[in-house]
Amino acid sequence: MYKDKVDEKIINFLKEDSRESFVDIGKKLKLSESAVRRRVKNLVDSGTIKRFTVEVGEENATSAIVLISVDSTTETSKVSEKLAKLEGVKIVYEITGQYDIITIISATNISEINTSIDALRKIPGVIDTNTVIILRKVA
Image (tube, rainbow, N blue to C red; front, side, top):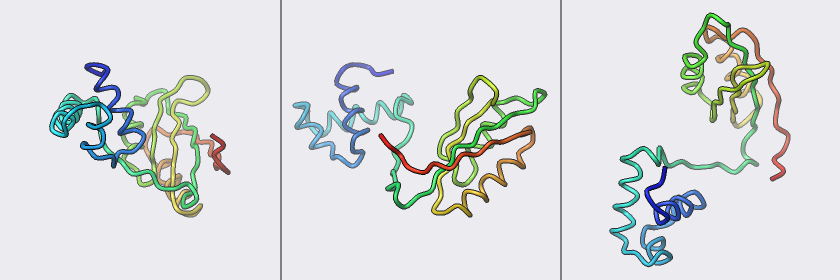
């Protein structure tokens, strides 16, 4: 996944704070800003870093876990791809067990969560869902 320990450290700094400047990361690693920039570009080009994102404070969001069963005649991966494109869907996991897919949905209120759930239930191949609203994050 990582080319070397320096790349791993750069990724860890960016995971902690993706807005940290290449200059600051370079100082911590005793590298020039251009060396850090080049390494990050290589990590992006190789697909090791897929995207940079913003995490909104949880006090401003309502989240739900939706467990999804897929019809046995439908490819789970096709359903997963469609789920990932829905408004509010943050994470999609294909799993084993009673359900085939878990999604994490986040929105500003329950009404928007419900709209996302209604949309995912309309995806061809989805035969059952079980939704759990997240009350609070402990750790």
